[in-house]
Image (cartoon, rainbow, N blue to C red; front, side, top):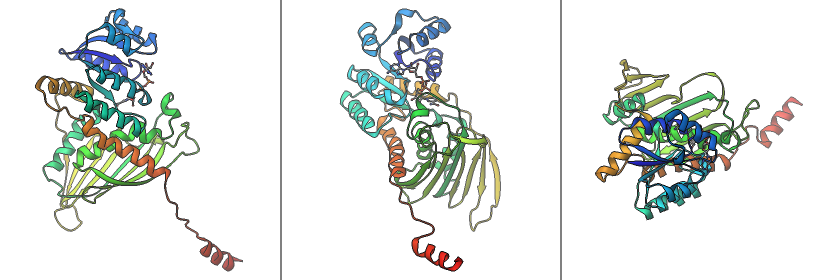
Length: 344
Ligand SMILES: NC(=O)c1ccc[n+]([C@@H]2O[C@H](COP(=O)([O-])OP(=O)(O)OC[C@H]3O[C@@H](n4cnc5c(N)ncnc54)[C@H](O)[C@@H]3O)[C@@H](O)[C@H]2O)c1
């Protein structure tokens, strides 16, 4: 299958490797605003500089391709995705689908109109540990899910587009965790409440800390707390998880999955560390292989736009919630008067 990759700098390097490592994929075009980024990829991978173009339009005019991979910053996903779909090509883009819900809706409609596959790469799903947790829940090991807590505290020194976004954690990072919530629990979210803030020491312009509560389709609640300016080494990129069901709890912390069996009452009867099941492929390699297989077999790929719209809607639902947060004063005027009268 012949690919054009749009955006080859930064995380684009992961996709350069994924495409190079898959024997059924061939890179026939590269597009980036930065010619040096393309030159570097050519030098390191023996690609001919004649496959480099400043715009997707020029690439489409000059090379024959079957699919496009888009790895630009989120605000620049919509244009190349819609253009590629319009040209009759299948598309993979990096997460999040876009930086606004309006862009996501336009991309959804473009995919439906073009009748081409558009996959959003949610590579966090395709990791041994996350797959194993989803499997345990699917097999009913903890019964019906009632409450979930995820704590993601990681200090990252990102500059570039993330430092400028209004909600860098929610939009660029939490999409992974929100998509994992759906993947692991098998439940979709129906409503959301939340708060976002920016600690004094944060180098981000936008709010990089959040506390979000989702109500899921079965009325379970998922409490998600996260920060991108955390001090110290609290968790890995998946965050720490506590998933409670009617028969027990699954916990995840820094690569270790623990299953606490609590068939009745509240005391753990047995606690077991569960070894993660080894996947043959992970991350972008998994996404790419699944995408190509789906096209070959005429099947629906995983995390296509029709699935991913439910994850990205959690992101923009959370953004709406934190903007409209209703605050209740702890000390209301009547209580203030009482305290004041008493202490005075
Ligand atoms: N899945 C993951 O684990 C993961 C990790 C990091 C980044 N990402 C995602 O990858 C995407 C890119 O992030 P990044 O960190 O590589 O960003 P970046 O800013 O480091 O690099 C983006 C590249 O795209 C190029 N570019 C920018 N606008 C362009 C345009 N309009 N046309 C062509 N090229 C353009 C830039 O020159 C640069 O080479 C984002 O959607 C981000 O969320 C995913």
